[in-house]
Length: 169
Image 1: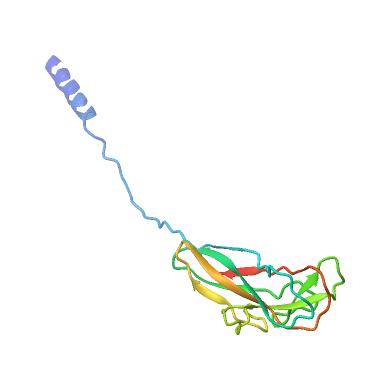
Image 2: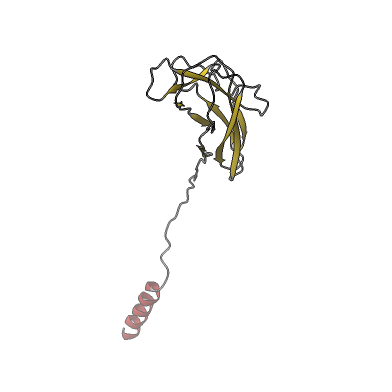
């Protein structure tokens, strides 16, 4: 009987060291993300840095630069609004005399080309021409060409306007 108990204890100890068979099951899940392009835009002042005699008997030209940074391969377009001058449209932009009446304006225009033949506007406006490109991840420079055309104004003083440049991507 002693032998029987020894054998029984040995069997129980052997069984205790056997790995327990666990049941498992597997499933999968998706991991997703969406990335989008990013753009920023900044602008320098467009200043006609000279005293312009009135009446204005010749065109006065100046230019400035917009700086656009867009993610690589991101298509973009840049539009300019009409400005804030009284009665301004993209086809007839106006600076207003600082400290003057709202009707004291000076006509000017913004263009996409050095020949100053294509008015720089925005999609959906009466001047729908925007400038576009594809992002490279680095700064890209867009020149805005300005012109004060001949006009009979005799109002003297300092004039200004604010233009909003919008990058759409």
